[in-house]
Image (cartoon, rainbow, N blue to C red; front, side, top):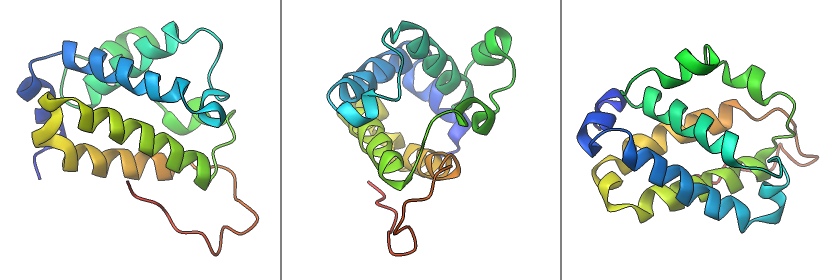
Length: 137
């Protein structure tokens, strides 16, 4: 598996990440429960996610410069993220990643990162959580 921080240079910089975010948000729009987590205007969130992904995968620190340290748990604590929501987010993100050929050599590295992060952000337990399993897409 390639190093996460090599992806930005390998895909050619910022632009593919903006396409990834646009593609991801198309999937969010098509999933009513997932869409309900987001504000009516998605423009700000799109920029924040693009900046974060660019920085996380080896590009310039746009996110830190504009928003400060990522602090993912703190920024997501206000959203009810259970296993079902985590899986919906993973499905939308991985579908977006896999739909863009530029990311093909990096799918497994990105999946590992997103899987870990999405699971880390779960902050609400489902009633039958002891019986549920993670659905790694």
